Length: 211
Image 1 (tube, rainbow, N blue to C red):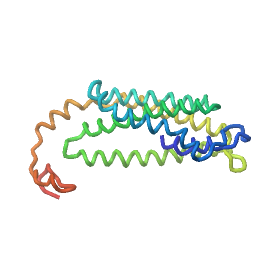
Image 2 (image 1 turned 135 degrees about the vertical axis):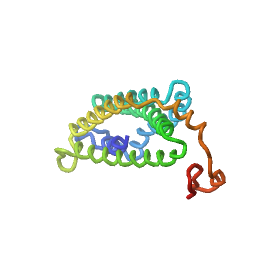
Image 3 (image 1 turned 135 degrees about the horizontal axis):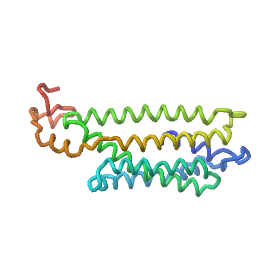
Image 4 (image 1 turned 90 degrees about the horizontal axis):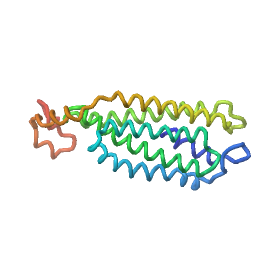
């Protein structure tokens, strides 16, 4: 996602004289990315309901699998703007489902007292992954650039790399353990030793010592 948002606008804004691109303005390229934002928001909300019915793991696998379509389209079908619009719409669906489901799974996988730490680590690792992904994408896209303009093959190879990465992510998602039942059982046995600290930001409700 980070790699697409970083480099797809540049692809769209490249002058057609380079053999690709549409010479789009900054505003125009931003509007082409807008469907991803809208569908990600909508399906992120829907992900909660689907997780309750089918389980967060299944929703995560489905979201990652749907996202593969996005990068396949960007790799092989990027000569028309409507093709990219379709790819962005599908990306929003896939990542909206996967991101929300992943957060649910992370919270379910730890005791209630560690929910904040787990959520924080999720955000940190996602940021690190995004930075690394954008950096690798930059190396691939700019390889063989001529006069400061990347070749079409650079973008094609970059999108193909993202396709492979998303396939790996979808496979990895199938190995995520189911923790819904254990989460519910452990939640019912929690002893809130410092209930009064629930009124304090960062207060510890569970444990031997307050913070």
